[in-house]
Length: 237
Image 1 (cartoon, rainbow, N blue to C red):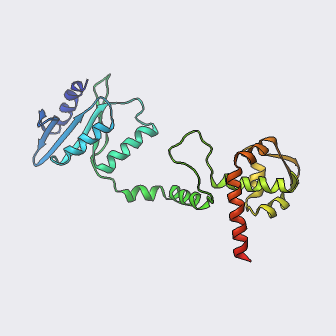
Image 2: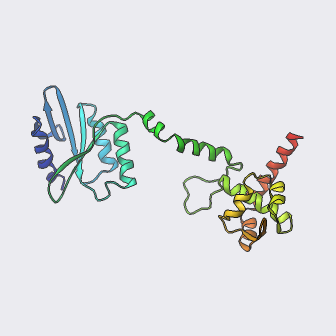
C-alpha cells in the first residue's frame, strides 16, 4: 500500500531537519526546510501516471521525488530507462525496502542535460546515421515486430547472392565481388549470416537452397537495388 511508504520516507527527511506532513493540497508528502520545499509522490510502482503527477508538482515546489517500493528489476535496462527519463525531467527517485523499511535515494532530483547523454552515445549516433545512409531501398515499416528488416547488410548480401546466381550459382569470390560491386563481398560470403552460401573450396562459393528462397522472398527489394546500381553506373559513364 502507498500509505506504508509514508512513514519511512517521512522519518528519512525528518532526520535532516525537514518539517513534514501528509496530504497538503493533494501532495502525498510535503515538507519544508528553511526556504526549500519538497514534494514526494508515493506510488507502489514507477509508471507513467506517477511521472505525470510528479512533473505537475514541479510547478509549485522546489524539489520533487517519487517514492516507491524497491523493485526487483532496479538495475535492469528497462528500469534504468525510466530513471533516465526522471533525470531528464529533474525528478528524484526514492525506494523503500519492503523487508527492512530502509530508504534509499537512487536518483537525485537534478536535471541531466541532454548533451551529456549525447556525448556518451556518440558511437551509437554514428552507427545509426551510418546504417540509415547505407540502406538504399528504405522500405521497412515502423512499429512491426518479428519481421525481416531490410538492413544495409541484407541489401549487400542480396546483391552478392544475385551476382553469384548470374555466374551460374557457383563462382570464385573475385568474380562475385566484381559483378556485385559490394566491397565486403568476401566477409559476407565467409560469415554466411543468413545461410545462403556454401563454401565449396578456397575462394569458391555456391548458392544453398536457402539462398534460392531468399531470391524469391526479396525479389522486389532486389529489383530496386539492381535498378539503382544501373542508374549509378550510367551516372559514372
